[in-house]
Length: 612
Image 1 (tube, rainbow, N blue to C red):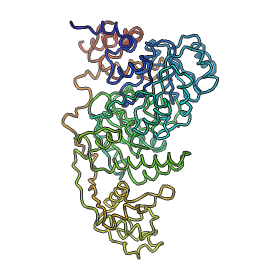
Image 2: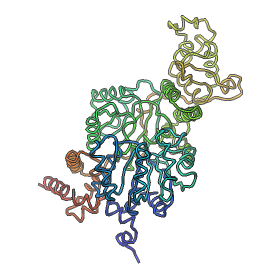
Image 3: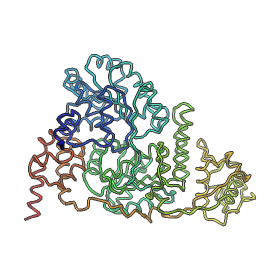
Image 4: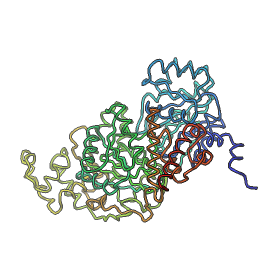
């Protein structure tokens, strides 16, 4: 006998909540298993890729369990967006944070104390005060969720000291199940989270890290503005995110793209809250907008049709890179992640690590993570194999990264490497790549002449290759551990023990032959179709305009009203009544009541205009 979805929901409280409140017919992979563990009263560490729907893993159990759920989140903006989205879905949610005035925080606490609030969002430093913990201990707390849990790990890429205190939660609330969630945690970080937060007593569920629809590529930095423009023009009319290391560069790159006919917006923490929200709403609502941003942008953003993520600078680690590129291709369509990198980036990242107020062991691991990222950039292997291998997964060559698609040639580089090593040794192992290459090419620069380096035996020994070739070789020697880069000085190159072995002929060195403008050649797999083919784009634009108007009226980001995924499903179904509208993916009971008739009227008006 076939069992209907409605009867399954009636017997399964979590599925009933999923449909009635959030408007989804089924869980995404991993969500059901995580909720089951929590509903059974056990702790869980959930490692799920960006876009996998981590929030529902605690929001659904929170509503099934009743009582109060505490959600720990590191960002005020993210907390406020989550609360706004839950309230629109008919869920009693609150946040108490430093951006709200005292009256608002007092009113929120009164709702919590009265038992009216189901989910309370707090930053870790506010939660772990003696006063807050004592007040919460008197309430009916059923669940605790720790978002961005990698922040608790000393070995993670984004350790935050205020997260350390959270390790006390298991003792303060011994009978309350705790869920820790993160999108980026290698095995060492996962082990540390389990030890710190759960004293090892936790079930760890790791969803697969692979995002096969995202084409991966890197390219040596030559002229970053030209390289970025060429890439963006190849994706004309598509939405994308461009990450820059500094606020200043973010502004410059956005202005440069605008000057060249690309609709580009800037986003960084130095902008006013109003400007950030306006740009974020435009990006979420309009098509073909490029968001040029620092890493302040992205957390909690659910825009399915982001066609690409482009890094103009080296990110901090492979974990950070994985999280950032995960904002592309959430709709399952072909997307692209492309990164520029250079020795200047490596030096800057080394400086960041050394300047950090952290123990020596933490710095050592941070340098090691950076080494792994550099190796990813310089590898001639399948990039997806390297990326997934870092998170403990094995994979066959993917056929959807620049190395698989371009089949970059390799060459024996032992002779060239010895020429480089000799020049570095003769100049005293204290100069950067640019000066070493000037010596190799026989350039009588002011710096070369001032130090009599034109008299060295190495002077002019590299005329067989151009500057770009030597710079690429030096990068690959750094990535391979043959050379070290002085981060505390001026980026000076020194010879590592492995480099001395290479000089003696004890170890080999093969290098990847650089091909200029690899990003512009842009091979993709035949199935890399993009966009929303077959969809009424004018109707979708109308629905996005309605969503933006509603968001502005309520002073919330557009995606809090409905996600792009929901609007696309709406445009495909073209519902004519409330019953049909209720079947749209992401439409729960509260949003059906509040927004159903508004969107139905917009769809009817559009269809009337088309038929007329």
